[in-house]
Length: 104
Image (cartoon, rainbow, N blue to C red; front, side, top):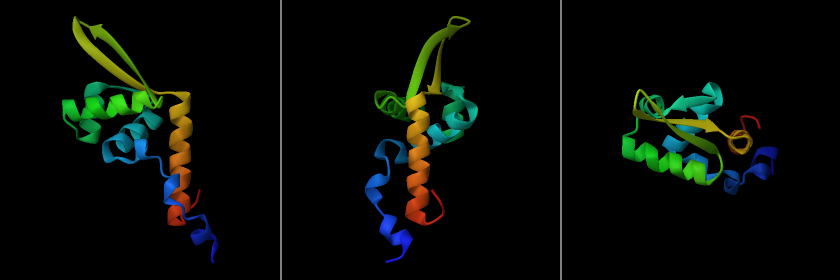
């Protein structure tokens, strides 16, 4: 067996991150550090409700922190990767690299 097939283990993929919207959020926050709700909604192409559900799932996993505040009397939600979220995203990318034989 070659090294790629020896390391092929689909269970290494983090299901919390793997969904399209959650992966988009994680990738964007990894580069941007923090982002407002509307920015994330635009970048990942999600509706308010869909994004809210996915942000909650990432927050419950401890991968992002949500800050709710007000700007000019309007609600403002900001998301930021936690230290655990950064580690989890790195592990996710490494596992994906191993599965595809493209690194990791």
